[in-house]
Length: 370
Ligand SMILES: Cc1cc2nc3c(=O)[nH]c(=O)nc-3n(C[C@H](O)[C@H](O)[C@H](O)COP(=O)(O)O)c2cc1C
Ligand SMILES: O=C(O)C(=O)c1ccccc1
Image (cartoon, rainbow, N blue to C red; front, side, top):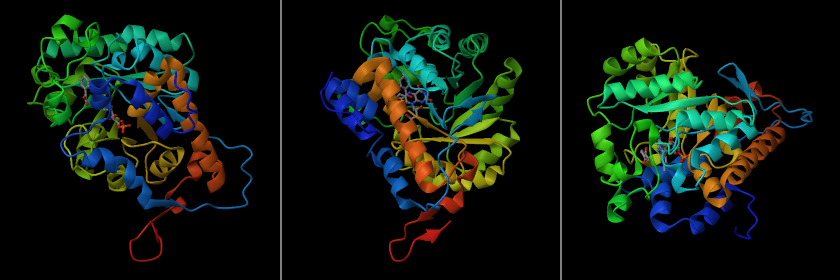
């Protein structure tokens, strides 16, 4: 393990990026095409400034939010990310244990290297935790239904239907490196062995498996007919699609651009959040992921209308650094930073974080209120 003291997510990124083999590091860290969105997801948070209210008793700060009828320790969960076995041998099992220990929930990718049964069981051995199952619209509907049924039987609370991936994004780095998952990693949820996965590029595998003829009408009523789990749409960036998700009776949306890995030059998620939250008018849950790297990023997302945030790459960096302990460290850094941000901003509970807690930096004048 590296000797450097890890105090921030930036420290973790730097250290993990030195440990990981080049092809894995590039696969994890890169975005699509010109890398515009992957960077802007983080840098866009710098447009917003926190307006603290002072001389408030913040000795008893309550950071909890409720999700699926359970309190989370703070408004953060871990996004569904495929192939976590590339970051650490324990992969998703380590992530599940770390999330349970931290008192938060976890998303499970359809491309996980362990099964939904194993991942949920690993977490529950440590403490209370809920999982959600990420799903792509698939060419093989029967296999898709099997994923849904297994997830429900294993106790998952929701399906996160990833809507931004009818085809894979433009991934120059993957194509240049001839990216293939390392040997020995199965994908049990899509019922593929390591040997089968090794026969195709990520791009060819993805397109043989994901359906590019997906639609609201094809997916949502069908999902509703086969499961009682909540149905959330992951990858929404416009108020129009928030409205459509409401029309189709969905329970939530994740404002997400897939961490900048699908269509490059889509906006940073934090920049479209206010319009999406406004369109929702409390009729559907609004969560967000992409570029969240500090506790104050979480604070800003909540102020702009998100109920909860999710992180992807910081979990991979934690795993690569030190398995379960590394993910625990990542979650503890974000928890401590978020709590301290609330205290310094004068917010005693989540409900006190609002648009009046933030201003927007203008290039040519004083801070604008929201
Ligand atoms: C290596 C990697 C694999 C991912 N795999 C999936 C996946 O299988 N399904 C999915 O819906 N999103 C996947 N995502 C996207 C994440 O769920 C999430 O939207 C994104 O990582 C959030 O941005 P952040 O990494 O900046 O926190 C993946 C992201 C990364 C970095
Ligand atoms: O690369 C991705 O963004 C992604 O979603 C994915 C899908 C399958 C396996 C690994 C990652």
